[in-house]
Amino acid sequence: GQQVMQIPQYQHVQEGEDFTTYCNSSTTLSNIQWYKQRPGGHPVFLIQLVKSGEVKKQKRLTFQFGEAKKNSSLHITATQTTDVGTYFCAGETGANNLFFGTGTRLTVIP
Amino acid sequence: NAGVTQTPKFQVLKTGQSMTLQCAQDMNHNSMYWYRQDPGMGLRLIYYSASEGTTDKGEVPNGYNVSRLNKREFSLRLESAAPSQTSVYFCASSSHPGGYNSPLHFGNGTRLTVT
Image (tube, rainbow over all chains, first blue to last red; front, top):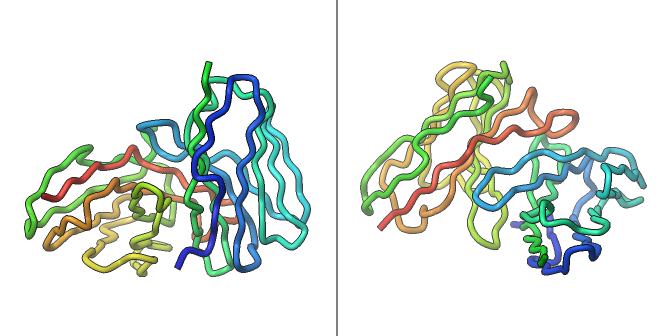
């Protein structure tokens, strides 16, 4: 069954507002990756988190890995129309397999 | 440097027909994967090949077969297509199995409809 849950499934925001998507695993993850998929496109790797409590930033995007390594979040500050797409987390449980979350589809209203 | 190339981009099949989805990567990656993407379900792993000469089942392997033809190519075959196999199929590759320091590189996808 699904091992990595992601919420919310959909998010509509006004341009300039912030956005957060959350990823939760039933088991401890060895690492977590985040991907972005533009409408009609394919997933593209954004970042990997490995350490407990790790925080990484990419311009307006902030990624966090929980202390227990069971959850993660992606926060976008001041969204832009270029942020539109579906954001996926993907967790590895140590069995050499990545389990993708269900994704959060972000719509940015200009 | 094309990355991961999938063919075809679109396909319509009738129930019971067979077809093979082709995938090739030019990044000298050891590991290759086939995922399907359905609305609200995220990406689910069908089969993967950790290295040339090996293949293993993923989460949803039923109704599919794979062949790792060589290091570059990994094909997915539907022997008798069913409407439940209507989906978008993505091939991906990574330098080694597992996620650590080995992000997935995806192809552009194949949109398959089975009527």
